Image (cartoon, rainbow, N blue to C red; front, side, top):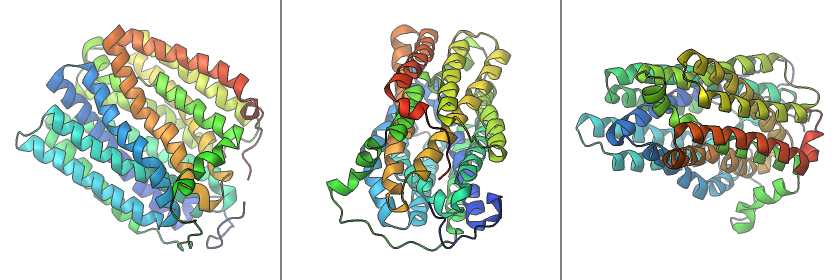
Length: 410
């Protein structure tokens, strides 16, 4: 795939490309804001209800708008300026965080207001996620796309370390400061996106309609390796996601407070950051399909160990391993999808990717909350980890094309 004509090819550091540096700043700000908000919402709604089921409903409130709107969002991302779409989404997210702060400050907050505002955030993220993914390949030369996605993962994971820890500290002061900080950071992210200066490619997209909206699905169905990579991550996250239950582990099993919850939420990001920094310098070059399957299997094993741990330090350590394994599959999948997709299709293909991966985080939270309510917290996480290992074995049989992928070179 040829690099965009507006980007100079020489140089191996993606940080030398100013549009990508602005993108990273926006990515960090938005991710920190989302993580702070996540800690505050999780702790507040559990304090209000004392129910693991309502923690699952927070995930469902984000999943539903993302599931319903993401395909349309991909069509929009391929038709209009992706920078403008991302800015508008981050403004909406900032307004929702501001509303959470005001409701808490004036004593209006309830489980219903939290779920309603999180639904709004989910709708905005339905447009933001595929748009930001599709924007990356236009910010760097083609040979640097894998490194760019590794840097993007590094930025996200750095924010995922700082955000939950900061969220826990702010929530110890009160939920209003936590939500207010998230509001400011969402608006900052929008400003950073505004600094990205690239030539807006003229849209070649066909007239809006069902065929255009669903074109991303048709594209992926014709490429078994991409379909296998996306669906593998979907089921791994869906079954192995214990994030929604961290408030329960922090308070009832590991016997800690909001600060402990912040550390637990940060731990996967610490492992992911270390691994993603390694991948910026040493991106996978050979047998990447096999590496991806190994990473997802490690994710499943780590989930099982975390499920039965009653030691705070062991739980932190195993979450670090879990995060490192997860980011390997994220970088491989993201690179495989974007390198194999023409620019005029990237929004719609990224939208399908977001449905499979982004919404599976929220649906996985709902699944975890539901199974925890039915079987108990520890059995729910155990079932998820074991299910992840079953999926790995099954996918190696169903998608041999993914197993045989050797290189991510475009």
